[in-house]
Picture 1 (cartoon, helix red, strand yellow):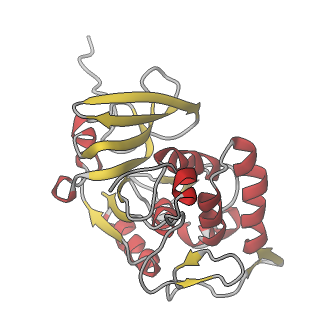
Picture 2 (cartoon, rainbow, N blue to C red):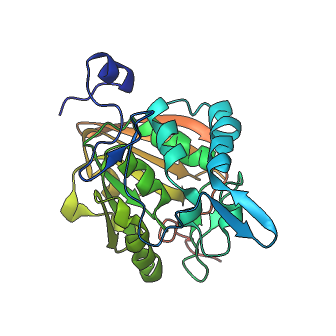
Length: 269
């Protein structure tokens, strides 16, 4: 499929948002969205002790105070992030913290996993320039928030998670996004049996980016990751051109290193 920018896609009449089967559209905006998973709280509000939380307003605040000021300005992406309930993808009891401008832990133990702060997820997905129908791989998907966003944009997503409990929970939470498939397996191996991909998102920092992930890109494909090679984590976009790869630094961020992506410690004398 020939790739054009979102702006050009709009000018030539191609779909700009996610279009998937069995979804309904908001009659006011035309934004397509999936039915809520069966375990999702249909109410727009949630009570936390004596505090009533309006998640719809929190999502709007996220758009205006965290995303737009940090150059997340792609309209379909902003609409998707306004639709997808971020509070659904945090552990029970942490819903009130879902929209803070910080990385949120979603698991404990040896494979501790985080959901990256909204601005970082927004900038990373925006850098991939997804169009409806793209085949996308997410590495370290956690409970699946970023996969839901990309599925909302019309991408077909393979979400790889090495933590069995997280993978099981993600499958349930993502049941309302039929174009997202959760696969359990080592993060640093990707999903070669399902390659090639139009885009790959690594949901966390890496000290060393395995070549096997870059090899799973199509020609013209993009990979975005947070690379921490010199002590300063940066969002980096890699673009494949044949056997060569372009590299673009996007912004400095803070993110924990994913399991399997630490640099070899070497010998200690």
